[in-house]
Length: 332
Ligand code: KG4
Ligand code: ZN
Image (tube, rainbow, N blue to C red):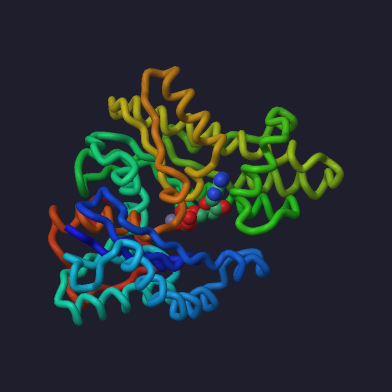
């Protein structure tokens, strides 16, 4: 079954063709990072306009790379929630137009569910149950997945998302946007023990809180202008990684599952990947993660999640709407 995936929820215009939910025949990402970089973050109206320009060429490129045309497709899967509303509307309008013109099923996909399903492309034989840490610019969730569409949310962030914290702290350090990959790179040269930043916990829950860490890093950067940036970046990164790994391992232990997966842009972080794999192994768990290009926003993950959604829950119709905020619950 061939599914065209479309993703326009933030600043990447992406289209992909995926076979049977696991084999990406193409995965084209037209990034707007350079456009938003000069503003230090994504400007929603600028993103929407750029999506309008890029959406059709990106879809055409995805079809070309997959060596197929619209008539060969079995369904269209599009991320319709959550995200920047004007940005989402562009992808959803394109998906509806193709669905209507070609008389193909239309499937609306949740962005976080899509991130998690990148793991089915990376590991086509992946079996349930597992625990997945989904960490992006807008979300930091730990999800227990018992089956397709059967999720229990074990943790969320109470304030900033991990990626947001990376980006805001990078800005305070005078680094560019998005800050996550830059901190990842320069932290490799730094001493992670140079500053003892706080590792916050929220009562007995596995929830995250990154705003205290963010404030501590911003204050430290303001007061210590000549402090080596690589040391500051490494110490900050270690604090985020420590908490993400610790809570995820606790979640896997609570649920009695061996398999830990990761997803979302922050799962591209090299230190998080290394520490998760090591600490999971030391505690009797097994951690894995998709390749970088499947961690950051892309449409192959939308097509993969769309495939499984289609075979378990069926298609949506042309009334499919867009939603700026919608937590992943397992019922949606
Ligand atoms: O999943 P994603 O591409 O888009 C959203 O759904 O938000 O995640 C983007 C976030 C940004 O905050 C970016 O700084 C962060 O992922 N990110 C990273 C790395 N690569 C991307 N954070 C830490 N280390 C990285 N290597
Ligand atoms: Zn994302």
